[in-house]
Structure formats: structure tokens, C-alpha cells
Image 1 (cartoon, rainbow, N blue to C red):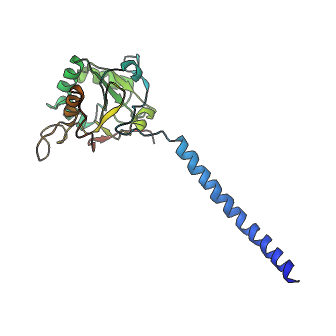
Image 2 (cartoon, rainbow, N blue to C red):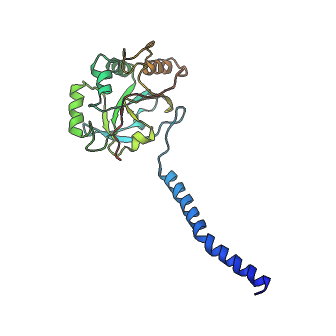
Length: 220
């Protein structure tokens, strides 16, 4: 066999050997792109807050779009989480903050993104929580976890502040000591500081703080 045919045979062998691998790499790349496209975009401080509509435990649908021009607090909630109990029931700061904010014309929405069968889930359990916690604001059910994942809510409680322009201006922990008086160091109420800054027309100085609490009980 002359050199020409040796080269042709070698080239064909190389193509036959590498094509499956190349196809597999291409397939993997496409799969990754497809997965990224399917994943919900996670909002960050400074972004416009993602719109959503969810039903409350009272059966009424609540849409974020209905509150344009108002300062909105989103609180991820689980009635069986000890950290939620701490900030609501054990002399924590949440009830008074919520009442003060609502009285000033603001909006407070609690959201439970736990999947059915997980801790603190189910309409009946959360209807009871409305009574037990004396909740005077909507408690919304997000069993698919779609809204929670858009906001990257990972803890209960995990709080967010949306200003009147629909922009996310705070995300993270309620305060610096896990519900008031727990832990060491000077106490800082991050959520109240954020609300005060928005009310005064100022930028939120500490706009993102790591959330603490129980994990959100998403579907796996």
C-alpha cells in the first residue's frame, strides 16, 4: 500500500474513533445548556423582584404585582421550625415589626415553600398556624417551591424587602443574633434597619446578610 492510501486509511480510522467521543461531548454540552435554561433565574439584591401569584391558606390568590408602589416584606415560614417559633412566639422581633410595617402602609407576606409531607406543610397545618401565631397577613403556599427557588430562599425565617419600585433591596437574616438575644455580640436588627432606610429614602447599608434557621423543606 502506497503512502497515499496509508494516509487515507489512517484518517478514516481517526474519524471513526473520535466521532462517538465528539458526539458525546457535544451531547453533554447541550445537556448542560438545557439544564441551565430550565433552572429558574435567582434574584439578587438590586434586581427587580420576580413576580409571582400564590394562594393563601384562606384560598385567596395573592400577586406581588398588586402591591406596586408599596414596600413589601417576604418572610419564608415554617410553623414547626424552632427558629420561626423563636422570632414569632418567644419574645422575638417579628410580630411587632410586622404590625408596625403594615400600620405604616407596607405589605407583609409569609410564604411556605415546603413540599407536601414535609415538616410544617399542608393547608390545614398552616391554617392552624395563622391562629397559633396570630398572623394578620397573608400566609401563602408554594408547594412546588418555584417561588422560593427564584428568590433563593434557603432558611426559615429568610426575609426579603422589595421597595416601591419593585426592586429587591434586602435579602437574608432577620437579625444578628438568631431571633434576639441568642449568641454574642451587639444586637442588630437587619430587617428593621432595611425598612427604616427604605422609609427614609436611603440605600440599605447592610443589604445582604447570611440567613440562619431551618432549611426550607423543598421537594427533592
